[in-house]
Length: 213
Image (cartoon, rainbow, N blue to C red; front, side):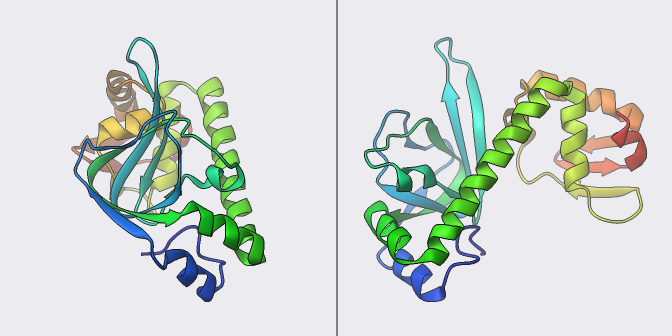
């Protein structure tokens, strides 16, 4: 498993960060943390799938991120002492999470420029993803959001191509800011553009038609 945070970090720094890290095991549906709770560790998904989301007064939920093996979350707390969670975290399937002590992470941030650079790169990527998500929400219809997602994840090569969604369609709906029924309508609309959905397997028969959706 490759960790998105440690790619450019010196091996000895990565070893120090992981030394003594606690590993927790979770079942699907387990709450990892709640909005407003203190964050005392940098979390790495070793296996499984984690959803980070906010909930509204009427019970509606808005997904902020979906994290798979190798992904890191909780990184904002490294730069903000006394940081509390700004959202809820939930395991969507059986998951293993490594918890890196936040004090140690802050210490390495000060001592090793390679780790500081990696954290800044991750934060910039988060900001870039947020900007893309906001732009898509403002500028694209539901079926256009789905089309863009499919095109980003299509295998290389001439159509027809097929690939398997990395998670359930209900998770994809939340990731794209759509209600499940809106995602179903979007897939129905894209059928005329050559998109065939069989469970979690997606077939794209005409990439150009999908780009014009």
